[in-house]
Length: 454
Image (cartoon, rainbow, N blue to C red):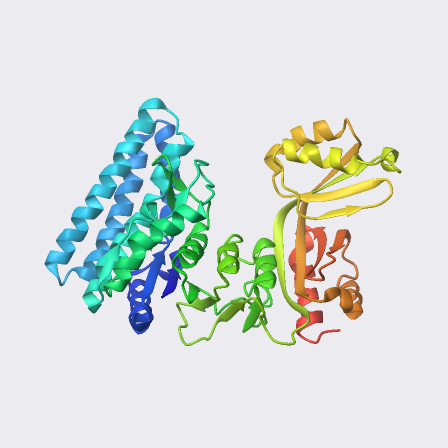
């Protein structure tokens, strides 16, 4: 069995849906399980509808829902319309889902606010609608597509908006729902991004969670491979929208891919890889718009013999918090007290550097920054540097490659650096620069490391 996941841009238009179905058809012998995102833009529309309803603008919310319905009906007619019985069955199921959205939004409008639970219930319906559409459309290609509700498979805790999957329960549920369908030569189709808590409430895994869903399902069924179909040829040496000369990476390790995802590479959701790592399942990144491309294969060992820099990633919206005090000198436990403040405020730290009397840390949660700084000033003198970007050089054995640091300094000549870190694993060398000059810095580093520039 394999898991095939299609992102929103891969199913956003009717001709893309047809192409995705052809991709599934070509892999039918491998017993595929399909996971789909909402059609491109639909999740944003559902969020906007929820906000409009909470603000008392129910007519505006209803108009957005009507647009969503019409879009799915149009795609459904184009794909299924020649088989009128399929189309009528599809529109009936679509109508029930739309009625559910409308009912929830009416309730939100009446109370004048939305709870995290209600918001999850609404936004999850984007994936439900697309998975219903995809499963019906597959039948026109003599594929026995069967819609499976992700809420019946992915079991989570009750943390609405960013729920944590419960893997043992998810594995048991997947073997009761997905595996029997596959054994009957059916192709299960599920929406990504959402699940259901033990108490029965619909939960979401956070934006971008459809990749995560695919990996969870792959691990639960013991898939031989997880395929992530997106709109680029694979993981690349850099974002091709910034660096047109970026090259596709054929093989990378789980660790390399995870670092790139965490530090801004948009090909994979940062959480995608841990279920695959746990199950030692290869992950392949492929391009729906260019199916002939071999893509990138992510495995435990990656490319044999590869070392040094492999790729760059960039993350914007970073703030540097600098804490300075002489009380750090020879005082055990002082750093623990500093970072306990971050923990109490629920602010995650990305990069850290320390000296005898100062600590610098990067954060990307500016909403909690004022309260965090207020409490940190009880322990140290604090300064805040906003509007920064992290550029991560990811590779293997970077600590053994002294020329990498030298090349980095050459490429950053004239560009001020706020921080620099190199982990002991030699996997990630990161620099923090002014966001206004981040693209310039990224181009210069890529030219030096990957294009043979001076």
